[in-house]
Amino acid sequence: MKKISDIISLTKNIEDPRQIKKVKYPINEVVGMVLFASLGNANEWTEIEVFCNSHEEFLRKYFKMQKGVPSHDTFQRVMGIIDPTVIQQLQLEWNEYLATNDGEGLKKILNIDGKTMRGSRTEDKKPLHVVTAYCDEDGFCLGQNVVKEKENEIVAIHELLDTLQIKGYVVTIDAMGTQAKIAEKIVEKKADYVLAVKGNQETLYKDLIDYFNENDFKKDIEGVGNYKKTIEKSHSQIEIREYYQTDDIKWLTNRSRWKGLKSIGVIEKTIKKNDKETK
Image (cartoon, rainbow, N blue to C red; front, side):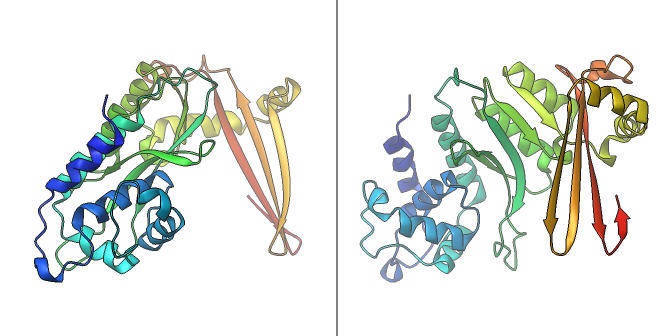
């Protein structure tokens, strides 16, 4: 099993194209700090700088840091000159280390989400888009995967899931990741899923909308207690959210495509402002 020190040692092999005499922050230290910051879900350069300043004492266990913590501009500039495939391989090693726990305990929520890192665009490179697996309960990132050029989030999510130990987790993904193959992979890794459904799954989306538009069905759901309502006042308006969930899925078209599917649900949002009501 790899140790953190083994992974950190890999950063020493990264080629540094900068002029040696002008180097203030060694490239391996910059990359290593970014990897640690990713654990704290720091995805923007300013967030990475703040994280490293807050955890400087810990980071010094692994890096000399003779000049302290780099500025966010330095993090951005140095990471921008590194071959993306090198970062990708380091991230895979990092994910393997983070996945050493079999996850036998209580089920935790694992959020998988895509995010573009602000300020990562350069003249000859597109902005860096990263798919992150983040556990709110533990408060840190379990893994990340850079979306490669000419690929999309779906491919990156598949690759990220391959590197993670998610047994016992409930994995949530936004509509982009609502794909039958992704659901299948999650179940095969002995986890459950909650996937958002929008227009990218047109037939499924229409079936769900038609079902939950039937008031009789919603009354039945309320009757068995699978209903919740919240009311919040925000910016001179009232926001009402109603949550419906049911395991009545025998009628669902092509339900066999979605391995492990056990229930469906909907959130209805109503906004009341100035005697007007919108849904």
